[in-house]
Image 1 (cartoon, rainbow, N blue to C red):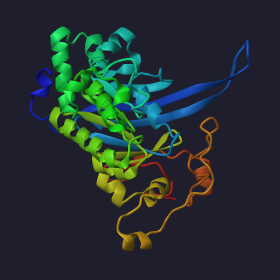
Image 2 (spheres, one colour; image 1 turned 60 degrees about the vertical axis):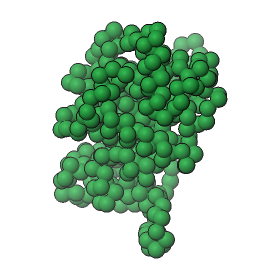
Image 3 (cartoon, one colour; image 1 turned 120 degrees about the vertical axis):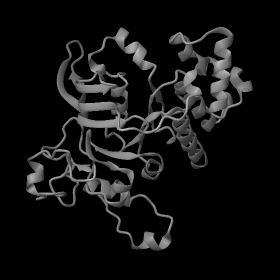
Image 4 (tube, helix red, strand yellow; image 1 turned 180 degrees about the vertical axis):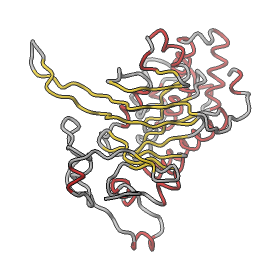
Length: 341
């Protein structure tokens, strides 16, 4: 590896590495065979704002289909965003041309959810890990082989297996290959898109520990996307909760688990099992009624009012703003915090 692998651990600072402002990602719905006409938009991400400090991990949680993965892909400019700003080190990525975006892609990488589908079965492990190094003109020849071997050691893989193919590895080993590929170009920021959801429970802890070790060693910054709140609690510094394309609550890890304010966050946390039978027996389970509305036709006012146990008529009319209720705890709900209805 290059200098970054030998530098001391990068400490967390107050420096904002990534600042997402009013991000919207709409996908058009069309009708017609020869002449297609747009009839609606799927509002996958609808006016989302948050920031990630250098060296920290922001957990992004929510139900399937709430827009978590789309948010991550939009940040990496894998989708052309509908509107909004994505400031990375102060540079708005949405304004850059592809040629200007290329050097920044080295700094921003993605770990995919499915370790079985994200690796090219026709390429050896060494070729998979080495490909981004070649694409970004970082090394070739003998230096490339040595760097690939070193990266494999770092993620816990035997360099002797560099000539083998993905089908010869287990799920956990394949995810390590995916992590090695992301780590190869020495990024600063990594989007972890549910990196353990496809793995056995016994392997999940190993991958989480590996990600934490890599963060400590190389000063990495993570956006950790997941639906498992117990995993997010283990790895995240702050947690953002999404529902139907919007962020409804953001707070430091301890604050959001000990003092959840939004009714959706409370419902999610009530579904997380507690290993203590006595506490589990006394705990109240919050069951949400109804189904998640369509992102093509979200309800007026608060998106959550159709399933919210504390909703009032005003919630059906006005969209709640994400506001700070103290202690860096932000919530989008008319019914909680100072001045609650």
